[in-house]
Image 1 (cartoon, rainbow, N blue to C red):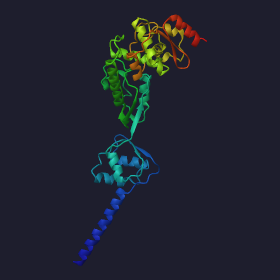
Image 2 (cartoon, rainbow, N blue to C red):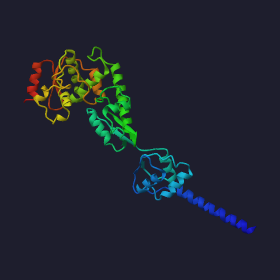
Image 3 (cartoon, rainbow, N blue to C red):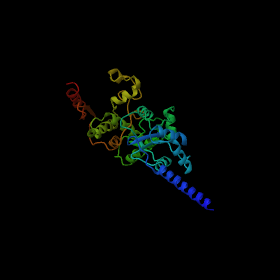
Image 4 (tube, one colour):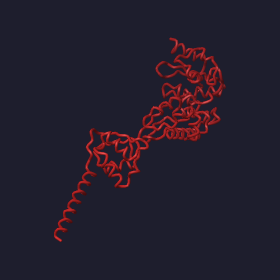
Length: 329
């Protein structure tokens, strides 16, 4: 009886030691080689492969302890992929909680005003934090996937900074940018000035893209818009170089020549009346607001001064004098 009691006591003692060792292992801070320490769990990672990736990144000292803990806590199938960052030392328990709850570091894509949809696609294709689901899709297929009803993708995506969890689909970013543009465009359209030469918000978006490309100084934006609005009212051709360049596509070599201005394309506003068929770039909110609230002026011309600003004229004679002064001097 005494022997059995002694064995039982020793067994309990061993269990206490084992329990203490387990608690120490699970809650002991894991030493980090540097701070912050970033690591990535790839999409489709199993528990074992996730542990391997973390060991290779210098997060884990041993894979088996993490695998054992995840299985013991019933979280073996809850590992979330993405980019993670450790600002301080954490325990195995805290690490498991972090990656099973998916508390990833957010990535961001910055879409700037004035770029084309082609440039936007290239930007997203090169982003390491995105899943490139649109890579093999045509522009039309992308529009269909994100629920856009327009026939052309140019100009439909709002320039802004978009945060997302690493591994998100690029289509999700495009859909957010498209919906954001639709919201801003409609809100601005509802508050527009009366008697503007636009029948639809899309027409305003087209002119906003032209204003975006033609504006050097932000303070000139509403005057640039005023010139184009005044020309549309008088049924004058817009005669703006960025539309010609857009219509040339890959043929544009950086120099715009006289023959380019006379070569007719759907986007040559020197040879054709009215707006271009589609936007020519991504306009920002300031350009959208400018075409829907243009400056009150009679200006029909403008020329770059050479310092980023423009000189505006009401008559062709005044404009030619400004060209001689600022461009031909």
